[in-house]
Image (cartoon, rainbow, N blue to C red; front, side):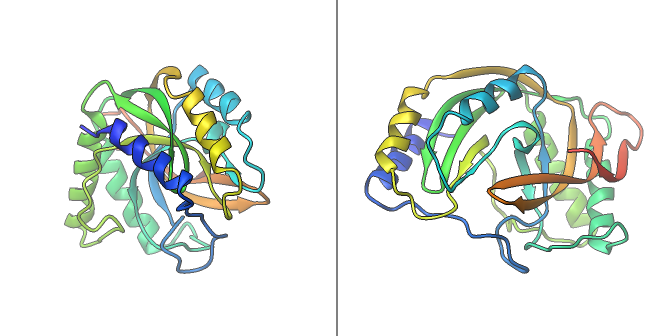
Length: 233
């Protein structure tokens, strides 16, 4: 179980002491913002998250909402601008993801608590079942069995979250950001079901990140639930 109290304290201290970090626009081969496996929340929870994120005073930074909001399961590779449908790695990811999702029920997660961290602002995820851990383990096994390594390199994910903001430049108002997070530290956005798992590509459009779905598998499907190719989102 992740210690969110300690995580929040470290995030506040980092911002208030001028140790914030920030992302750069995507470039070919960068270790950040490459293809990943994610699950996206649905329903009223997404509306509540989006509405709150829109109130943060973060000019020049990447503020997320709507279909951009996601829980990351695995980071897969360095950034690539183009990942065509017949790309060998993309096909491998799709097969591994379909194997992972088959027979696994949708995950339920409560999104509650806003926290600053060195690179932005996030909302904590509190799983109501073991599905995310099961998916994480199954996908790792499916990738290893195909001889493919991702960017996790042995990392154990024990903290689930949805990012509301990524800093995209030097942070000029750290005290205001921390105060905003403090004001919403106990915000409860409710429980959402994560009904599918996706391989996605992140695309920067102006001051916004767009999440482009490359492959998708439906959870709870006893058959091969993969839906290859781009889908809306």
